[in-house]
View 1 (tube, rainbow, N blue to C red):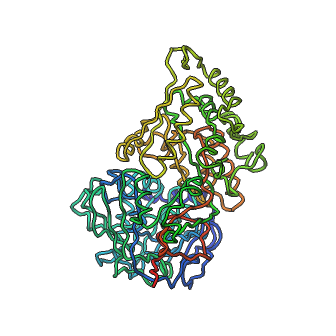
View 2 (cartoon, rainbow, N blue to C red):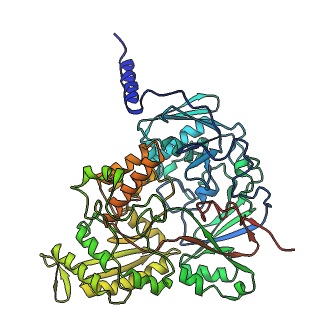
View 3 (cartoon, one colour):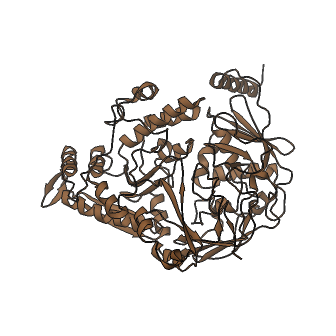
Length: 609
C-alpha cells in the first residue's frame, strides 16, 4: 500500500497539471523578470535608463512630513512609522524599473527562475549581499522574513503569504517559493518583499517592537538619529554592499536625508519658503500657479519643476463606508455623488486646472471605454449582470454640473434618488421612516492634502445642507486617524489609491471582498462584489496583454458604477518646488513620473562654485 503522503502529493501534482497544464521546459535563470514578455534591459545594462550613472555623491536632503511618528518599524500594524523608511532603509530580492509597466531586476538576488507556468519562483542570492551591520544575507534570513511578515507583519503582507504552498532552500544561496494559486503575478510579488535579519529578533517580539528596535536592512540608508515626532536622520552607508551594482548606479546620492515633522501643511510650506527643507510637492494646480512667486523663487534659489507621467489616475476622493447605513444603499451614494458640485469646486479651488478622475484607470489604456461594454469586456461582465449596478454594462459617466454654485439640476436628481431610498424632508432635515435624520461624518487627518480636502468638504457641506443632510467634518491627528481608519470608524473619509500600469494583487487588498471586514485593510469603502473579485482573478491569470486589458476595463466598470467613491481631480503631472542645488536627469524621465523612486532616489546635490 502506498504511503498517504505519496497519494496526497500525487493529487496535488494532478491539480497543478489541471490548473497550469502540461508545461514546456523550465525557464533559465535570468537577471530580470517581466509580467509579460522579456525585460527591456539586457543582462549587461549599465544603469537604469532614467538614472545618471555619473551623478556625484554628497550633500544633504531635508524633507518634511505632516504629523508625527512613534515607531521606526514600517512592517507592523503597531505604531506609525515614517513612510519613507520602507524604501530607503530596506531592500528586496528584486528591484523595480519605473520605466517599464512591471519589470524587476536582480537586487539582493543575482538571478530569478520560474516554473513553466510560474507556479514557482526560485531566487539565487548574491554572495556579496549584506545587512547594514556587515552580516551576510542568508537563505535563512529570507525564509524567516517571508514567514514573519506573512504571519506577524502588517496585514498588507498576509495576502501574499496565504498564497504560498511552501518556501524552501534548494541549494547554496537558493530559495524556491511554490504557490497554491494560479496567479502569474505572484512570481514578481515574491521578489518585492522586504528582507530582514532573523538574528536581530531572536529575543524580541517582532509585532510588538518598540521605538528603539529599528529593523536592520540592507539598503543604502540607515537610521542614524531620531527624536520622536520631531525628526529622523538617515545616513548613506559608506559600506553599502550594492554600490557597484548596475541597478544602483547613479542612485541614492545624498550623504544624509533628514525627515522633519510638522504640525500641519501650512507650517511645513512656510518652512520650505525659508529654505529649511529642500523641496515640497504641490498637489493643487491653482496654488502652483498663484502662490509660488515668493522671493526665493524670484531670485532663482528655488526652482519650479513639472514632471509628466503615463500612469493611470488611480482614485482620489472621498470613500463612502458601505458597512454603515444609509451608505449601504447605492441610491444614497449616487445622490451624494450628484450633490458633489465638482465643476464649481474645481474652479474655486484649482482654477479649473486639474481634470476630474473619470474612472479608476483613467489616463491609460486600462480605462473603461465610453458607452456600453463590448467584446471581451461584456463577456466578462454578463455572468454578473443581475448583481451589477446600473451603468456597469450599459455605460456609466459621472454627473456633470453646469458650473454654477447652485447646481440645481443635479440636486434635483439627488433628491429624487433619496426619495426612492425612503428619505423625505421633515422640519428642514431629511429623515427616514423611523424619523432618524440623515447625518454624516467625514473623517480627515492632518497631512499634506488636508487643507484642500477640508476646503472641498466645507463647500460640499453647504450643498448637502440644501438637501437636508448634515455633514460634520472631523479633522484629527495622524495617530487618532490611523486607529479610526483601521476600525472603519467613519462615514466618509479621504482616499488616495495610486494604480500602476500593471495592476495586480494589490487590487484585492484595495477592493476585494475577502478583506472588506479585516481591520486595517485598504478596502475603506467595505465593498463586497463577486464581479470585482472575478475581474481581479481574470487580471491575475491572463497570459496575454489583450486579455489583461479587457479584465482591467471590466473591473473599472464595476468600481466606478458601484458609486463607492466621490472622485475629485487627478494629478496628471507632478509638481516639485526645490532648491536649485538639487538636480535630476532632465532628459530621461521614467514613465511613472514622480515618486520616491524619482525624488530622492535619482536626484543629487550639486553646489554652485
